[in-house]
Length: 181
Image 1 (cartoon, rainbow, N blue to C red):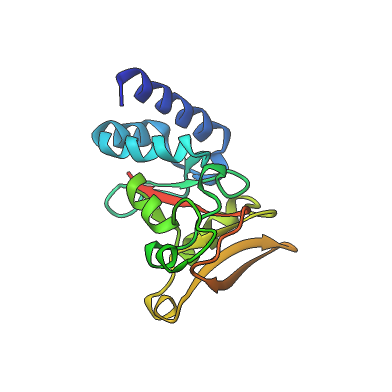
Image 2 (cartoon, rainbow, N blue to C red):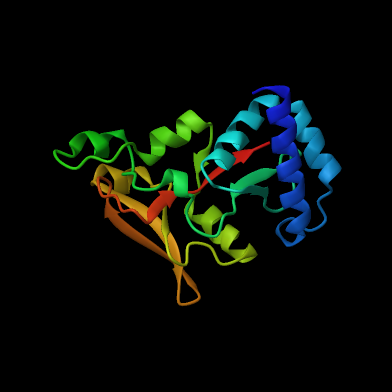
């Protein structure tokens, strides 16, 4: 990333941080900014989250090591990360109508992780996300071995976890990512 791009991204993150203080009560932007300056490699991941429509923001306080978790906080599953099956194995198993990509590989290229079910539920404490879309979440190996994958959404005021064949994909299903900085 060029210096201008880095500064523009940091300005965007700062504005979003200040507009959504309820997501990170008691967290000071100066501390987050310091972490960003000390971890420039993470800016590329945040740039990719932003570029694909994720609107990343800090959720919660720093962990024991002082790192902050940035998560996609856009209202619906990021537009630039939809219509994906779960992983490469699922993509390769499709004989017809293959999607362009899969969530696991796309996340890896971006340098982010799919949210776990617990992280997805934590995110929902800060707003109502995925009321019209759904998001793949990290799937336990025992479920994946059987051909399934998990996704979540919010309907009727509740967060639901569902299963589907990992090879499935829908225009309204994507994934939310996170990166620790």
